[in-house]
Picture 1 (cartoon, rainbow, N blue to C red):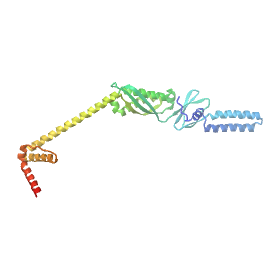
Picture 2: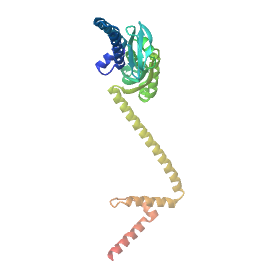
Picture 3: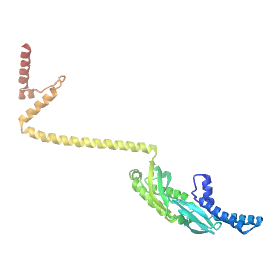
Picture 4: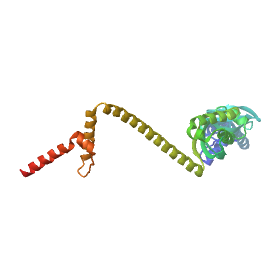
Length: 307
């Protein structure tokens, strides 16, 4: 049975027995009333003591009746072994020795971590998967009566559901499609725990661990894929450049002046660096009179230096 008591051992024992401040008030009222009645109604001292003792026993019995459940708690009560209801939150009353509070069920959202180690995927790859389950008790009656330990049952249901989903999923889909796998696991666990009065809010896969050898192979595969894409992009660029050159050649073929200007531009670009040495074909020199221009430039420079 799952009982949620206080953080301190005394608080848990007091709650299990049914001791609280209302119990103290009830005990004082009943015991005080019995003592007052005995004192006023009977003059004999032993009779007074007997009545006061009986009143104390009755007060102790009555003090076990009030119970207090916290805002997020439901107390499952059995009356003579049969389900009598889920009480709380707040103050509720039971019949001592007839009613029994067997469970204090926490209705808040809980988290349960679970894992599947060395589970084979659909493509026979062993993986270790860690996940977190968020769930809550929606029906305290079914949680108390339909399953012995609903916390343990939820943990086992989550683990088996995770193994089932892994066995139906390829590794690639598991690595890139965690959101869809989370939804599938949630639906499967919720279907298994619905009869226990438990609702599954969400499932989140925290980590997927694959063998180191497979991880290295996948890394090399990704690197090879990136290199292939780089070569394809370079080839596409070469094709585009060749198309541009073919189009330019058609323009230069019909316009000799443009071809000559382009040649001079190439020559100029190559001679911009002072340390460069440019070898110019004779045909280019003769067609463009480069030798004449160069000679005049050198003569002008020499004349300037002489001055």
